[in-house]
Length: 258
Image 1 (cartoon, rainbow, N blue to C red):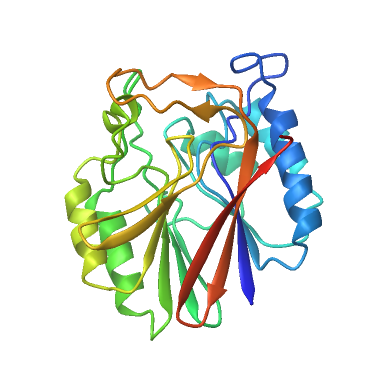
Image 2 (cartoon, rainbow, N blue to C red):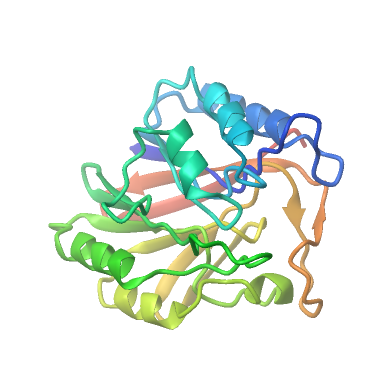
């Protein structure tokens, strides 16, 4: 059985900085080492956006160093805390479109992995954390779905295009998410994977089945009324394990350091 490892919302900070008292780099290294030790045969490692906390060059440099000895393919994605220019400087070989968007297709035996870039910008509006897919990015997705040639599409995007019930995060989800869901629903069966919310959640929206993976650092709070996207607590980080069957997919979330 083929498998994918997924680590989301890493949020590497400048040296000496923490998030609610946690060291994101140390948390990521622990999660990464645990995942690779348990699953050295994984076909790829997907980093599901928010690689850094501020998008600073030194933050990407720390992440690149932490990944230097990883022997399986590493597929990095962008989230709302990332910035294209310093990311591309640190990861010059990361696939990207002529427009600069970090998107790619990665084909396996029975599945097509499609990575989407939902970062809004440049320019980057101050304190703006909602996601966006422009027409160019949607056209890329449409072509990738149309040419899957029988492979089950697995779509990865940082921002969920649906509400989760968590008020603070629903306020900064993907803009125009209904249009994306409409595109995906017409190509069933497939599965959608997201990050951003820092919680493990699953569901179905508009006929599209989806999974959200939690952060490798801090954990989101189940708050259905407070419109505050910064709420988080110190719970174990995790990695996702996606098992690929001939006719579908099974998603696991594994806590590390509990």
